[in-house]
Length: 313
Image (cartoon, rainbow, N blue to C red; front, side):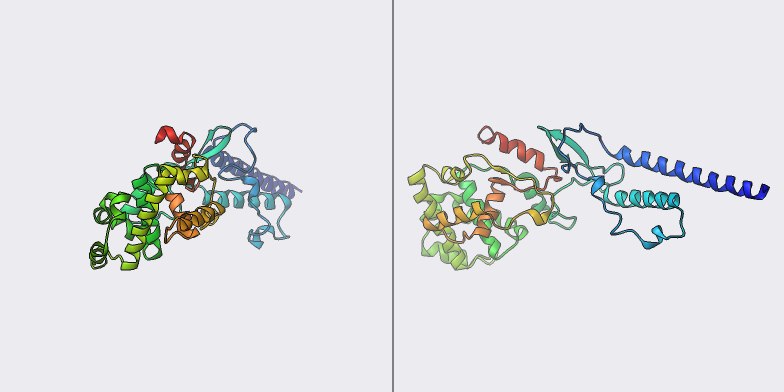
């Protein structure tokens, strides 16, 4: 009888220690979260605890029939904590959530490696030029015709190169096409085209050079009709960028209905290398559509600029 009583006391003591451990772990875990008013829409937070499914991913050993109900709950709790921690950066790299105009806007600022939280397509191996382009230009509303012509040209070059390779040629492109002054490029003749095609450093085929010059001539025509290339393009957006809330790269479209409409209009005005995919890349780069991921540090600033675009211009 005494042995049975001692055994029960030992079991209770072990269970009590387990419960204290779980409470301590849960307390530590939720120090990583900022709690916001219930008025915030459900499902907009960076991580929803209720969305984590245990039944489909737990190891079978955790639900063995030989375990007691309490032991199973303890193991399930510990497994939940382990899985959540795998998704959350350690202290010093915690993704903080802020409230802007009644909705959650993630503000990822610092990670353990000291780098800013950026869109997922920017990696540790990304070229510095590409990172700078993402951080300083991509998604910032552009209104100057010369700058729009430059971005349209670089977007068109995506058919042959990636952004890093194009950005490395940017200064040379500016030099060759007169700072992307449309009237200058529109007046380039056969000699200039031949010189461009023979420039190995630039790596621009003759047919591509002709497309760029044709686009310059298209801009000149558009300016006569609409006053500026900027007004022509921004008119399709009611002079205000589209603010998207993409969380994952797979959500960011390669083409959109807006890009398809603009592409058709550009082609109608004599532009070349302006299919829907290239046009989508162009309007993303020119800040006509805000496609930074919501947990990118540039997202909140891009939204701020988008909400007062003409003031920014």
